[in-house]
Length: 168
Image 1 (spheres, rainbow, N blue to C red):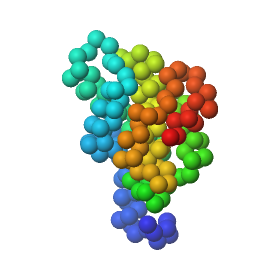
Image 2 (cartoon, helix red, strand yellow):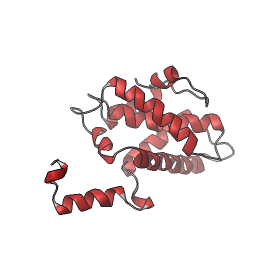
Image 3 (cartoon, rainbow, N blue to C red):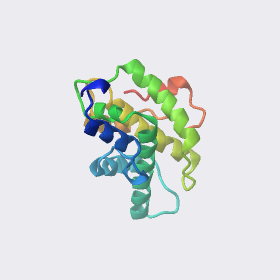
Image 4 (cartoon, helix red, strand yellow):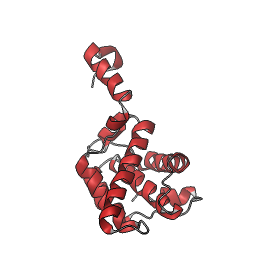
């Protein structure tokens, strides 16, 4: 990628288009990633009073909602790290981001049809997968495979140490 001074007018326009994307395009996960994460989330939480098919649809919407939150709160270039094994952040940076994003997401994302405990697990699982995927020697596939092994705090007042432990 060229430096800012080397960007062509078209590259700069694309950068602005991505930054100011309309709501329906404010997502970086592929459809396959959304479906896979919804399935993994389904193994961790239960949506009360809803049949399994309805629950899967709700979980897909939750994954999309959290992905849009991340799109708005992380540079899009960060998502490129989630698909690269040779580039990425170190474990300390991952721990810092997990703590900050989990706390910020808990303040800004409300999923009223889920019990609070399930909401925390959903938010933290998705954030944990994206941050783990952005680590050096990790990618989205490895992070998804480890999603169910993450130690996800289920309460609102999780300690920083509990949030850091989400880094597998």
